[in-house]
Length: 381
Ligand SMILES: Cc1ncc(COP(=O)(O)O)c(C=O)c1O
Figure 1 (tube, rainbow, N blue to C red):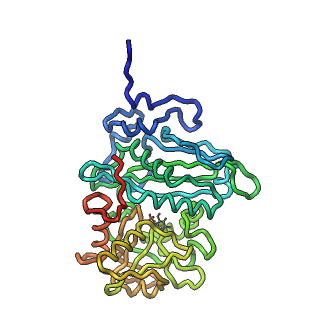
Figure 2 (cartoon, protein in one colour):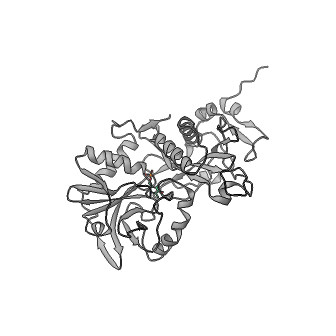
Figure 3 (cartoon, helix red, strand yellow):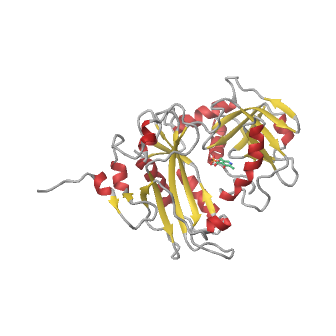
């Protein structure tokens, strides 16, 4: 008697090789996965409230893993069960912070397609960061394939259209053991994902920002321009202090003159004065956001003049409108900024808001509702 196995069954190979998990899923099987396929172990999935996702990690089904040992090339990589990672206590990432991360997202279009937004740009940014941090990095192709596979394997976690996105988090970490300060000899590229809603607890309401002039996110010659994990823990103290006082987030100033605005803890910042949009130029201390780049292109096409230059905090306080951009926040309108005890308020409910126009255009393209003349969207299903 001949027994036919489904692609999913064939793809679920039991292996004892992976220390991370016992189950692997081939890329072919990931693409063949049906969303209603039973995935036991996940009561959380049954209880998920798509209307109140927030922004916290959920244990999805699969993650992607590839390793680069001393031959300097990453292995083919595979999807494995989402789960804990085993590391040497001497791993480069744990001891010397050799680690980079990225953030991109998959959304479900109205027509049911699964859409990614400019994943190649995340791949390139990871390569630039890896060069700065003396790490090996995966090729752009491997990075994009890994993101696609992770999205497809976890597709049942992609929220319904308009409810949020599957936030995809590629990580590159030095996993080889080292004791003296030097680059690790082994790197691991991991991609995991979690369904998310709004980044800020304010939801779509406007943000109240606090300009911090005691703490700096980065300095000239530092690594502020790359997405190194080492840039984020130092931000927690000013961020928590600001949140305790009821602010949504912190605007950081440059560390030399303490008068030019740089960025917010996890997003870029723009101001509008008259019909000119200005944003701090990326001079190595600011992360060059993919949303920032896209918004600049969209704004030009909508007829705005956009300036990338040094922007003083005084200009920020005198702006007509302020907004922030990022993968997680998309385009978020700012309602107030507090600096040196002075609070200024901005337009937030005018339907002619520049940030609203930019938000609608960006989200329209990302969700497949507006024609993507830029070729930014990658449909994977
Ligand atoms: C410090 C910082 N600035 C800006 C951004 C926005 O970048 P992107 O638009 O690529 O998400 C992020 C988010 O990744 C960030 O962490």
